[in-house]
Length: 137
View 1: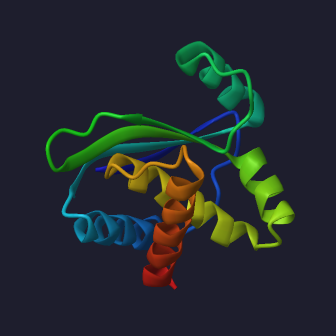
View 2: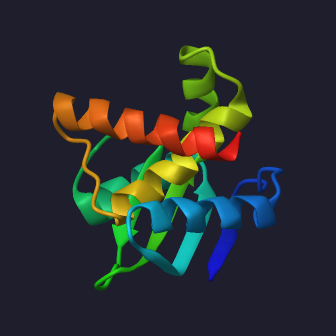
C-alpha cells in the first residue's frame, strides 16, 4: 500500500492512482514488489528537524528515506520537503510537477538499493530517475 500524508503543508495535486501504478512498474523493473510506502510531504523546517534528530545532519534536503525493505518487498517512510522541491525546480529550470515526480521516484530507487553518495553513484541515480520519468511521460 502506498499512502500520502502531510505535516504542516498542503498535499500537492497529482493522480495518486497513476503515480501508484508507475511506482509499482519502477519497482518491478528492479525485481521488487511494493509493500508499505508512506510519503510524508513537509516543509524545509520539518525535514531539517528530521535530518538533525535521526541522521545527525544539520542541513536542509529535499528527501529523507527510511528504508524498511525486506528481501524483495520495498517498504519505507519517505519525507519530502515541498519547499526544496520548489526551489530545486527553479534552480534546475524544470517545472514543479516534473521535479516532484523525480523526488517521488528517487525515494523508491533508494528502497531498491540505489545509492547517490559518490559523484559516480549520483550520475547513475540521475540516469535511473530519467529512465523512470520516461516510463511516466
